[in-house]
Image 1: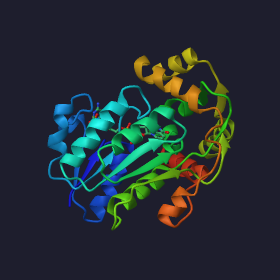
Image 2: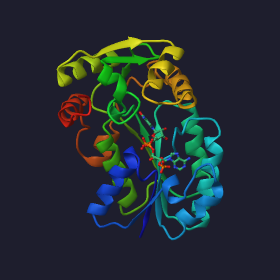
Image 3: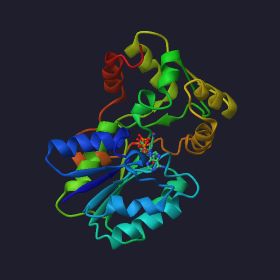
Image 4: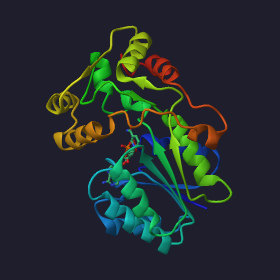
Amino acid sequence: MTILILGGAGRTGARIHRRLSTNGVPTRLASRRTGFDWDQPDTWSGAVHGTTAAYVCFTPDLAFPGVPEKMRDFGRLAAAAGLERLVLLSGRGEEGARMSESALREGGVPTTVLRCSWFQQNFSEHFLTGPVRRGLLQLPAPDVPEAFVDLDDVADAAVQALTCTIPEDATYELSGPELLTFAQTAAILTDACKRQVTYLSVDVPTFIADLAQDGVPADEAEPLAHLFTEILDGRNASLTVGVENMLGRPASSFSAYARATAMSGVWS
Ligand SMILES: NC(=O)c1ccc[n+]([C@@H]2O[C@H](COP(=O)([O-])OP(=O)(O)OC[C@H]3O[C@@H](n4cnc5c(N)ncnc54)[C@H](OP(=O)(O)O)[C@@H]3O)[C@@H](O)[C@H]2O)c1
């Protein structure tokens, strides 16, 4: 049994790889640095060949235009290669992501979909790291509540889905344990970092200009901005029991994440 981890060096992929390796499960990591490119379908079969299951993580975002077609082709390739299960990382409340989920399932391989809330680690391992350091979180969204989920919970759930005895064709919505507005996350970050962090709702050009300070190119920031203006409207302002159902324990809180991350020095 070898598990293919697409996006293996990324935020979720690396966490899943660590857990599987610790448990002695053989893995194969795949991304552009190993020759697998979502934009070059002729690179896919070499990565899939000889594996029994795959963690499917699409970058930059499963909800972007053109991704369902790639998911359809990948799902069919996985079926033809004899894979027994797929685990797909997806997002809550995203119409584009729903289409990608269905498209991947067209190949007929049992697929567990992990439909996640906003990642807590967006504030420390992704585009909000620089804004937290600057003490000003700017997003093109009203101050709506979100149920921020910890990536370590997501990784634990993915490992559970990849290694449970019988592959499950199921969808789990994964959220954190509490609803927080961005202003409330800023207050928690203020406490954790021991300096002021403020939230400001801004227009799309201001958001793109802010991310440009951290080297995020406009062609990445722009679709992100449009995705946020779509999904940050309160549609995901509800808690789910996905983490408890999959892992038999409560989801980890934003405060615990903020305290531990501040201690790591990433925001200093
Ligand atoms: N952020 C959120 O709050 C949130 C919430 C719900 C769902 N999601 C979903 O999470 C997914 C991203 O997961 P993640 O954060 O774990 O990933 P990630 O860390 O952004 O990226 C994982 C890896 O993907 C590889 N990659 C980039 N472009 C590629 C390409 N063209 N072909 C092959 N590999 C490529 C990169 O490695 P190389 O440089 O080696 O290629 C990167 O290390 C997205 O699909 C998004 O929809 C995000």
